[in-house]
Image (cartoon, rainbow, N blue to C red; front, side, top):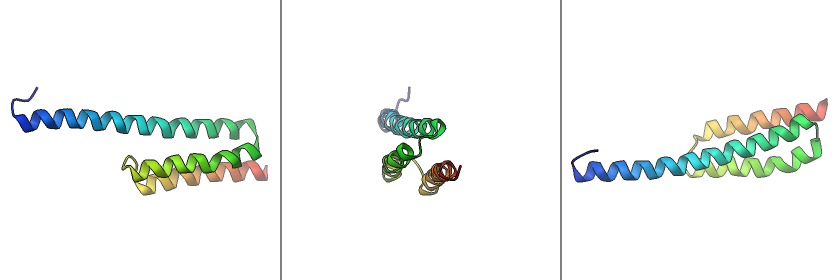
Amino acid sequence: MPNIKSAKKRVLVSAKKNAVNKNNKSEVKTAIKKLNAVIDSGNYEEAVKLYPETASIIDSSVSKGVYHKNTAANKKSGLAKKINALKNA
């Protein structure tokens, strides 16, 4: 544990931010897993309905600073590709 007051505060603040970021990343991963499960089951209509909700969760994590905007775009693009592949199959 640090001895300097500001260093002690940084430890507490960084621990709190780490917990918040971890929770947000977990929320994103859960939403992606739900959508992937629907895609794997082959239900195109349900996947199309669930995609905007998942994209919204990903976008909100970007605005909170958890993910970089390009990372979020990459995740959304991959999901859209899977949904389109399901449509064409």
